[in-house]
Image (cartoon, rainbow over all chains, first blue to last red; front, side):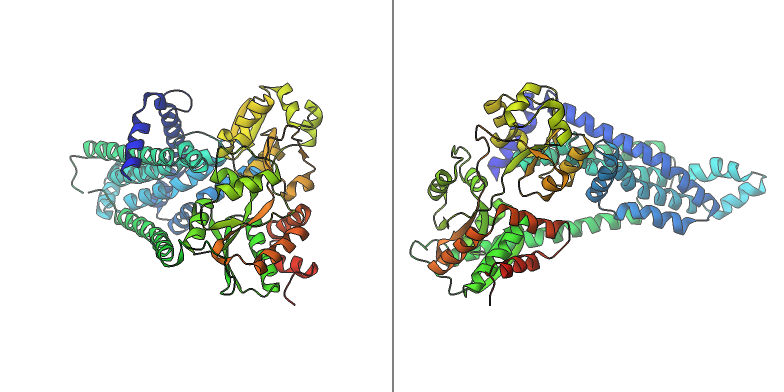
Amino acid sequence: MYELFADLGTWLTGAEQWQGPDGIAHRLTEHLQYSLLATLIATVIALPIGLLIGHTGRGAFLAINLSSFGRALPTVGLVVLVFLASGLSMTPVYVALVALAVPSIVTNTYAGMTAVDPEVKDAARGQGMRGHQILWQVELPLALPLIMTGLRLALIQVVATATVAAYVSFGGLGRYVFDGLAQRDLVQVLGGAVLVAVVAVVLDLALSGLQRILFRHRTA
Amino acid sequence: MTRTPRSTTRRSLLGGLLAAAAVPALAACSSGITSLDGQGGGGTGGGSSAGGITIGTANFTENQVLGYLYAEALQAAGVKTKVRANLGTREILIPALEGGDIDLLPEYQGALLHYLDPKAKATEEGEMQNALAIALPKGLQILPYGMAEDSDAFVVTPGTARKYGLTSLADLAKQNGKLVIGAAPEVKKRTVGAVGLKDVYGVEFKEFKSLDSSGPLVKGALKKGDVDVANLFTTDTDIIAEGWVVLTDPKNLIPGQHVVPLIADRAADSTVRRALARLGAALTTKDLTELNRLVDKDKKDPEDVAHGWAAAHGLAEK
């Protein structure tokens, strides 16, 4: 066991391991690229839905259940399904990752919107604010901490799952996990897994730090 | 302050799942160790199948079919059998065999030899049989190999074969730097793969795409033209169904992969040996391909499929 960790240390710190197209630096960049793009697409889809159902109070049941469907789908199964329909490209990977990220963003945005005190909305209406003004100037700012939490959750899930890109021949840190498993190279598998975990934790900490700075004047 | 109750439940749920996943693995470990203490070790003398035989199989269709075929043949010979299907890969199966959790395992000559001795050079059947007998750990033995063979194949579509004039692996070298190969990730570093193709035939591909092992990904990619050459198994039903061209191997890079029973000494007796030899002599590669098709395409139960074949060939229990 000790030997394994020693090998892992050598693997993670070796200079040659960080260079070249198979190197950690390149794989890490790919991994972040996949994760950020997938989360961005998911945000563009999910945020308006969450805001809309939260603001109108209509369609919440349908939207939340439909989007949660994405969370229930097995990611690898979805990748294979889309792959068989569309061929070998990054599309299957992005479809699966977006499907995974959407539910967290929709539910958290909706939760943030409904958590806004109705009296505050009433007061805004009483001052003559219109629906869209209430949405942008009252509800959205108040819901922002929970929306951010949703984005954070989505990003962490996507980072941890973006390893599936390697399943359909692409890069990212999953390359080490899949290749290591196939080549019976346990150190490589562990190295890949540790890197993914570190990236997820670092991103989570960074985003929660950002959240704290942005909303430090609030008492929730 | 911003964490929702939802996120906490999800986390503890995940923790629960991880714990649940770890329990059977631990249980499997400990049972392996106890049985190793209990009855492993010895077994240099003659074995006996009188107490019944437990057959283990790996995690793919064909191996399960073979496991049930072994069971049919042994039952017909009056041996009690139990099949533990889908146990995993050699990393799990071989220790389980040594530890006494299973007694018998359908194996493949070349793949098993490479697992036991990665530096082995033998590719011819008889040669491999000897090499295997030497390389096997104490307490395990192989029985005579069967006719059926499931070896690696490099295939191209008829269109690609025509376009580049490909009939053998040697022809690939004429198109160096142009073709994309799709295969399981391990094939990139394996002798029976990119390494051997380069060393033996001087083939260099434009790109290596890591997909799966003769599964939906690599076949889908070949069908759609995303890869030009695919690494499949000879018993893959789609090779015939799609009319794909298997490139010949004039320099014998690819080792023979005849099906061979791997058995623990403690369970090997003449009844077992004879029953499995009879099965090996009757089952052809074509039969095995067809049985795979029945399970994979027609969604038949592997046990029923095996029974059907054994009954049709007079090898089932009367």
